Image (cartoon, rainbow, N blue to C red; front, side):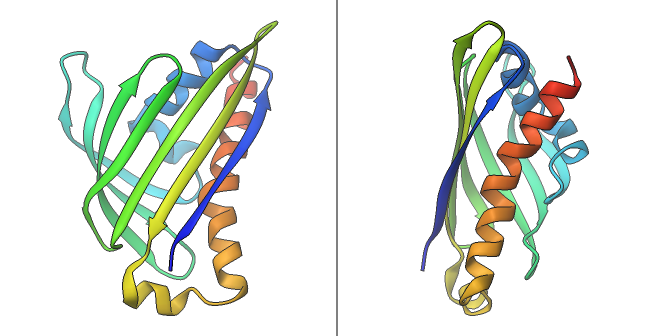
Length: 149
């Protein structure tokens, strides 16, 4: 079973601000309610977190993941799980400049929860967890970026 989806929002904030908020992984738990904690394990030459350990509240279970991030400023951030409680996870933020200080941000996530967690994700729980992990993340970025204006 795969849990995947993407959610797009239009944000009344410049692309650079939206990208900077999404790339600031250490502060992400301040605005992403499903993210309990982030611990930076490695950084690249520019000081950006490239390997982090996260704890997320997936509502049916608290999930730990070791995630590898790659940056493509200012339009994309990719992530891939290297180790964790779930079988597989890949995700990405993409950003497009809409002009007039507006940005289109899309969050996409593909998760294979594995057999054990997959047994907890049945029926309406799948849609609820997808909404929390995908839709809510994009909406919360919008709220954060627009409040920083």
